[in-house]
Amino acid sequence: MNNWADCISYRRYGYPSTSPSGMRSEFTRDYDKIIFMSAFRRLQNKTQVFPLPGNVFVHNRLTHSLEVASVGRSIGAFIGTEIANRYKDTLTEDEANFYIFELMGVIASACLAHDVGNPAFGHSGEKAISNYFISHADKQLNGVTLRSHFTEGQWSDLVNFEGNANAFRLLTRKFKGKLDGGQRLMYLTLASIIKYPCSAMQVDPDILHRKKYGYFLSDEEAFREVMDEFSDGNYQTEYFRHPFVYLVEAADDICYRIIDLEDAHRIGILPRETIEGLLLNLLHDLRGDQSRTREILGRLKDDNEAISYLRAKSINALVEKVTSVFLENSNAILSGTFNSSLMDEVENTCPSLVEIKEISVRRIYNHPSVIEVELAGYNVMSELLSVFVEAVLTVKRSPLQKKCIQLISEQYNLSAEMVGPYEKTMGVLDFVSGMTDGYATELYRKIKGIDIPAHK
Image (cartoon, rainbow, N blue to C red):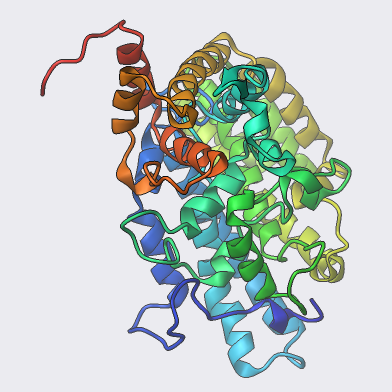
C-alpha cells in the first residue's frame, strides 16, 4: 500500500450494494452480525486455557473475544486519531473521518471474530485435528491410503489445521441453504483478521505473515477477492498483511498475556504476591516509578480486587506502548516490510514481559489441569474424526457408516455425489470444529458406548 487512504474500503463481501443502510455505521453492523453468529455464541463453551468452569470463573473463548474487542477498540481509537492528525495533508476529509470515527469499530469487529474458527479444547483441538491425519495417513480406505485421496496442497491443509483459516472460512463460506457471501461482512473487517495471508504450502517460519496460513484451498477464491480489494493487481504470488491486522493481533496478545495471569490467580495456581511482582515490574518498565500504585495495593485487602486493579493498569500501559510502536513503524507496516509483531517489539525493551511469558509457559500452560484438557481433546477429536471422515470417504459404506452421516447437518452438503474427498473432509471438519467442548465430549461418549442416549 502507498498511503493510508489505500487501507480503506466501504464495500461488503457477497453483497452488491455499497450505499449506507440507516443510522448505524457499516462496521457497527459487522459487530452486531458477529455477536449474533451461532459460531460466536458457541465460543461460550470452548476452552481458552483452563478447563471450563466449575465454581470459579475462568475465561472461555467468548469472554476472551469480548475483552479483546474492548482492547482493540481502544487501540483503534488512539491509532485512528493519530493517523488523521499526522497525515491530514494527504487525507481527504472523509478519509480523515474514517480514521477518527470508524477505525475503532473495524478493529473491534475483527477482534470479536478472530477466534470463531477455533475448535473445542483450545489450541490442543487444532493439534488433535492435524495429528489425526498425520497418524492415519497410511490407513486403507477404498483400497488406497487416506493420504492418497488428496493433493499435496489439500493434505497440507489437513495436517496443519489452522483456526485462523477456519475463521475466514466460517465468515465467508456459502453453506447449503444459506446466502452467498457467508456473514456478508465488510471487506475491511475480513482483511483485518487475516494474520497469515498465504496458503499452507507457502508457510515460512522466518516470515511473520507466513508463519502459519490464513485460508484453506477451498476458500482461495474468497481470500484473493478480499486481499485484492487492497492491492494493486489480481492474483499476486505473495500478499502482505493489511496494516490493521497488527492492531487486532496486539489486542489479542495483550489480553492473553495479562488475563491468563488473572485466571491463574483465581484458581489458585499463582499467588497474589507472584502476580503483583510480575505486573509491578511490567508497569515499571513501561511507565517508571510505581510508588503510587504500590500505595493503592497496600490498601486493597481483597486479593481478586488487587489483581484486577493491576490487570487494568497493565492493559492500559500496553495499549499505549503498542500504539507508540505501531506509529514508530508505520511506514514499514504500510509497505508490508515490517517482519515483527507489535508485542514482540515491546518485549525488546521490556524484560518483564519476557518474564511473564516464561512463567506462563512453565506454571500455567503446563499445569496438570491444562494438560488434562489437552489429552482429553486429543482423544475426543481423534475418535470423532475417525468415525466421520472414514464414513464420508468410504465408497461402499456399512449400515453403521450411513447412520453416522445422518448425524451431520445437511448444510455441509456431504450427500452431493459430485463433491470430492477434500470437500467432503472439509465438511466433516466444519461439523467437528464447530462443536463445543461439552457437545464433542457428549457425542464421543455416546459413540463409544460409554453413555447410552436417552430420548429427550
